[in-house]
Amino acid sequence: MLRLLAAGRTIQAGCFIGHSPGRIFNRRPSSVVPHVKDILRHSSKPRAFSHIMAFATTGGPVQFTPPSGAKWWSDATTAIVTGGNQGIGWEIARILSQQGIRTVLTSRDQKRGAEAVQRIKDISGDANIQSAQLELEKPKSVSAFAAWIKEKLPHVNILVNNAGMAYKGNTFGPEENRHTMNVNFFGTRALCEAILPLMEKGDRIVNVCSRAGLLSQLKSQALLDKFQAASTPDDITALANWWLEAVDNGTQAKQGFSNSMYGMSKLCEIAYTRVLAQQLASHGISVNAVCPGYVSTAMSSYKGTKHASEGADTPVWAALLLPNDVTGKFFAEREETSA
Ligand SMILES: NC(=O)c1ccc[n+]([C@@H]2O[C@H](COP(=O)([O-])OP(=O)(O)OC[C@H]3O[C@@H](n4cnc5c(N)ncnc54)[C@H](OP(=O)(O)O)[C@@H]3O)[C@@H](O)[C@H]2O)c1
Image (cartoon, rainbow, N blue to C red):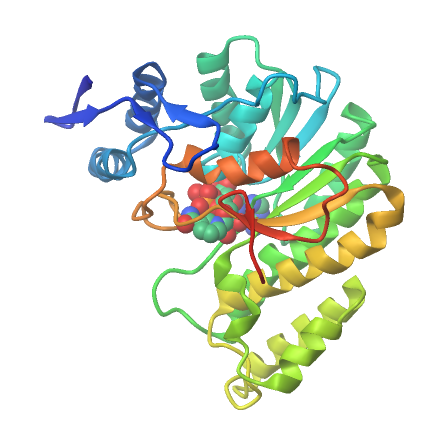
């Protein structure tokens, strides 16, 4: 056991083997120290304590180790991870870069992006990683980022659409709904379309979604049928616009939509994953959705039961270990689950 003195209290971080048989991660004391230092460096004192408590309750970081012989990637492989300045995205970017993959993490704030890169370099030494600015809800930011990527990385092997947002508490309203949809669905769609020209056969898109986006939140069979029958990205956009209008005029409950802005945005993202996968199947580019689980990050106010590195496990698994001919699926804990 490793004893760490933090915020005046002692936290014990143990060596812990992942709970799921066949899963390829474990927690090691040697990987714990940088994470606690990281929390202390990047948090105000009161927040640092809650981060460390979350860290202690989740059991701390887990390590991703691919099975021997499973590697198709090399230092010529390239990856983009959106929302990589913190949380699950930072862990995904860290793991991919530690696998030798040339990785670009995006951040809304350039300074925080640069700091996130530095934190990975502090742990990994010669990691091939850099940051770039991206605000998903701004079309100009998406196109500027895509132009920058085209100049830097003419071929993108892996795109992990991790960036996302959710309002806290009971916040609900037309403006907040539009913002949630603009980031989680419309922004993700725009980024996929901007980056796809740089992808080719064998490449992978992983959309970090959520079980909050399940179809079962729809209360109308007609609506459910429409989502299930959607076959193009424009069909999903039309349904997303329908949801936006329903919230604008307060008829969402009457029409059978759920009352969750975040849930509907993730439902649209999962549905988009399915139809994009169908469109790209003949091009050999896989597109899958994943749920990271309930993870201790800013989004969950550090209440999640998984450490961010454990939340990164299924997204990284989908990006690296899932066979490329598996596409259009939704996974949680490395298992296919129904949307
Ligand atoms: N935590 C959970 O329990 C949980 C459960 C299910 C699914 N997820 C999903 O997992 C993904 C990562 O979430 P997390 O838990 O790691 O949350 P997080 O710590 O809040 O990180 C979210 C990331 O997305 C970025 N982002 C937010 N709005 C953006 C925008 N408009 N444009 C570009 N980037 C934006 C954030 O940037 P800033 O740092 O600048 O805000 C941050 O880098 C999300 O898609 C989330 O929906 C999380």
